Structure formats: C-alpha cells, structure tokens
Image (tube, rainbow, N blue to C red; front, side):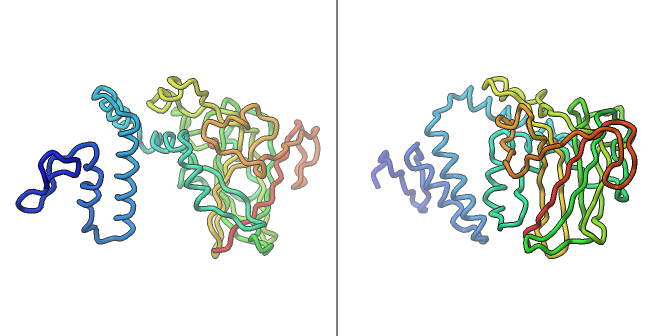
Amino acid sequence: MVRGTITGTIGRNGQMRDFNEHNITQAVIDRFAGTPDARLKRVMNSLVTHLHDFVRDVEPSFAEWEAVISFLTRTGQMCDDKRQEFILLSDTLGVSMLVDALNHRMPAGATETTVLGPFYVNAAPVFENGADISGGMVGELLFVEASVAGADGKKLAGATVDVWQSDDDGFYDVQRPELKESALRGRFRTDGEAKTWFRTILPAAYPIPYDGPVGDMLKATNRHPWRPAHVHFMISSPGYETLVTHVFVAGDQYLDSDAVFGVKNSLISEFPEHPPGRMPDGVVSTEPWRLLSYDFGLKPL
Ligand SMILES: [Fe+2]
C-alpha cells in the first residue's frame, strides 16, 4: 500500500500504521479480533463503531474531550454505597428504560416494569403484613394492599415483596444522614391468599439528586430533575421473573415529564381518600387515610 492513502499502511510485520479518521475504526475493531468470547467481541465491535461515529459526528475539541473525561471522572467519584451517579446518568439519558424495554417484553397479565432507581437497599428490614413502615416519618396515612399472581393467574403465596418510597418531603431514608434506622422501606411476604398489606405515608414527588455531574447536565440543558410521586416494588417468587416496578400517584404534575422516563399508564393508580374509619384489615384509623390497591402479575420464567 502507498503511504498516506486513506486505507493506512501495512508495515513490514503486517502492523497497521498511519491511522487517520477514516481507517482507525476498522483498525481498532481488528485489534479485538482474537477475543475468545463471541458476545464480548460483538459488544466491543459495536462499542468502537458507535463511539467512533459519535466522535466523528461531534468533532470535539481537545477542551471538550477533556470535559467529557472530567464529567465521567466526577460521575465515578460521586458514587459510594448510598449514591449511584452512574445509575442517575443512565436513567436521565433514557438508557435504563431502553434496557428495561428490551429485556421486558411482557406477556398479557404481567405487570409492566420500570427503572430500579438508585435508592434500592438490599438489606431492607423484614415486616409482618399490616406493619407500619413509616419509621416515624410524618405525612398522609396510606394503606397499601397488593396481590401477587403469575401472568397465568396462579396466586403466588409466599412471594417476597420489597417496597421503598420517598417521604412527604420527597427524600428517601438514605438521603437523610440524621436517621438512625431505615424508614419507608421494608420486605414483606404474601400470605396464603397471595396478598400483602401495610401502612405507610403518601410519597411525594422528588427531584433526583442534582448536586453532582448529572445535575450539572440537567441544568445546562434546561431539564428539570423531578420524578412524579410513586411507591417502588420489587417482587420475586420461584419460577417467575423478578418484577421491578413502581406504582405512580394519579394526577401528579410530573407524570408526563419524569426526569428518568419511567412512567407507564398501566402503573398509574388512584390513591383515593377515605374519612377516618375502618381500613381494609379491620383496624380503625382516627385520621383520614388514602388507599393504594394494586394487583401485580409476574412473568413466568
Ligand atoms: Fe423513586
């Protein structure tokens, strides 16, 4: 080959040299040719192809590329066991919901999924049905009752139901360092009738954490950080795909502009108001209360 052509130069030992904007992509892909794992090889080829196309499209200056590196560095440095800035980045770019959509083509009868979000804690306290998970947080009393079935209609007794939610000010417990114990999260099991129920408070809409690099991105692009009020559920039962979803409060002002693109119509529920009196489990409330009643369906494995 003639030195300086756009196809690059093959050296005496067969190496490619003289890379330029036209030939470097294939050269990098070729460098991964010996990848033993076929899936990893496909992923690396696609990553290089799309990343290079992105750079060719944007033509970043050196200063801009340094800003990209700095942004990703700060994103990583923002992460600890309670703050996951990379999940926020994935969420706000719509990637989390795209991955979710590709992996959850759900059959009829199965509840739709949405993002896990950054506030799930694996070691949530275990409660008996009927318990109060508010942890002393003040807000409108909410009674939650849920049933769990397979998409085939089979009732799933003994299913594990993890719940977590924001408080009346829109904060999760992990965002309140003053709390000694967890609040507004817990793990339940469905009873013999495949039902679970508990007391809590009405969740509030909240902004995703925007004091970090993801917040900088939202500010620079005139995007708001708000998520409509919701209760998170993660439900598992042997033989079924674990369901990760939310139930959103109908009427919330952010349902159509969720910062992380997580809202689906089937996941919006009325939380009707009730006067003081008997709640579904027979306990009498002396204060007004709201009701969330939802039937979940799990996809068979
Ligand atoms: Fe949330």
